[in-house]
Amino acid sequence: MSKPLPHAHPFDTALALSQDPSGHFSGHTNQAYWNMVGPFGGITAAAVLRAIMLHPQRLGEPLSLTVNYAGALTDGPFELQVTPVRTNRSTQHWTVTLLQNDADGAPVVSTTATAVTAARRETWSLSDTPMPPVPAPQTLERRVMFKGVEWLNRYDMRPITGPVPQTWDGGGHSSLSQLWMRDEPARPLDFCSLAAMCDVFFPRVWLRRASQVPAGTVAITVYFHAGSRELAAAGTDFLLGQAQAQEFRNGFFDQTAQVWSQAGLMLATSHQVVYFKE
Amino acid sequence: MSKPLPHAHPFDTALALSQDPSGHFSGHTNQAYWNMVGPFGGITAAAVLRAIMLHPQRLGEPLSLTVNYAGALTDGPFELQVTPVRTNRSTQHWTVTLLQNDADGAPVVSTTATAVTAARRETWSLSDTPMPPVPAPQTLERRVMFKGVEWLNRYDMRPITGPVPQTWDGGGHSSLSQLWMRDEPARPLDFCSLAAMCDVFFPRVWLRRASQVPAGTVAITVYFHAGSRELAAAGTDFLLGQAQAQEFRNGFFDQTAQVWSQAGLMLATSHQVVYFKE
Image (cartoon, rainbow over all chains, first blue to last red):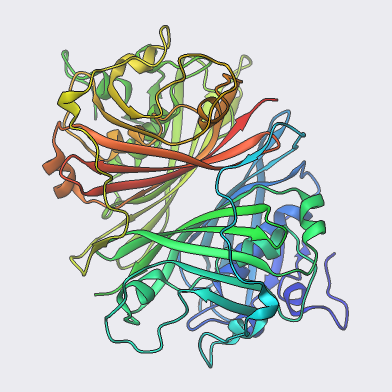
């Protein structure tokens, strides 16, 4: 159904799903988007959304997506159970469960998700969080945040503010990062790649403390403010991403994120809660 | 199991749940928390969380809660299917479905939810969004936002910034509201009442446009930054709530919220996506 072409973009290869007769989707983890102990969380969120997009009963376009990372995926096949639990006149509600078999062949829940798709109509619209003034992406250099973390090679990221600390000296003073980003190689923006890009921000605790403690996303929510027409207009341009923490407390913190098109349109806002150690 | 006492607080009466032999919970909507076409969304979120709190397999305290309002509840009984889908060493993942029977007696999904509970340990902690300087609640007057909306009588709300517009003249210029709030009558804070208070903010579109268009929450996420000890310390004090929109676009907008204790501790951050018309 969504088999990649021989020369498909790595993002599409990673999101290749087949639908089985029971209506569930099957996929396979992909080393091109590997993080440290499992896939990049953004590619898992994108796979969840891809399954919804492929579902024959889908109505409308993504409005919200919440993904809960219940356990790290292991390298191998996975199944996505995708259910449109309620369809209204202009909104549709979805639940998704991602399962992998354990060593004994028993299915184990790795990820849960809920989503809303919606038929959008043109209305009064207004941006209450304008894009901050930043230098153009062409004036900045691409930087790879960490060597040896494979998924980071799948993005062209150009930090503006709040790059990965150069020294882990405990001297952090802000949790704000801004960067230009796009798929590498360039790929036309769609809802799945936008969802993934809402999760590219490294853990705010590393920045605020200048200390690289163990950390991992527990749950992420993405609200989509753009429709497919606006995403098509963004094309392969860089997107501006901004992330900031609000509270670090007893093993967990939250981080908020905004993603604008290069033309200054707010495409998505996102929030996540992150585990950290010590 | 959680039958209210004869003189129970209305919040506890509204959240009275009984557990049936299959492990599901039953409740009933309550007119004391009625909104315009169904219950106040905050009371539904609180009922979802109450069921998790009562579940015999629960480990840890609430960390995150996402509630999707798939359809308005009607006045009557409801069932909550509560499943701990995965239990890790320090986090536990939950899915919840709220069902009501339709006119033909067939169960219909009204609400879906996911949640994470967690065992928290003391770690390095830091607030990156300090409480804004505001006048004390005792210096402000209680205001009821709208007459005839029953749930608003269940809260003592004292607006500081961004009250409900006095005139609907299209002249709005900001989406920021700050207010002191507590249960009315006063009730010691717990996770359920905190979750409900994350949803007391009236739709940002009313404020930003000074126009009272039809609007309703589609989905809300709450991240809890405090544990039961901090909630107990907040007791029956007023809490400071702050809400602001980020983007209004084609029928939907998002709003972010922060809730601090009177002592200045960040208790919860929250985000929601809201439908609006025109």
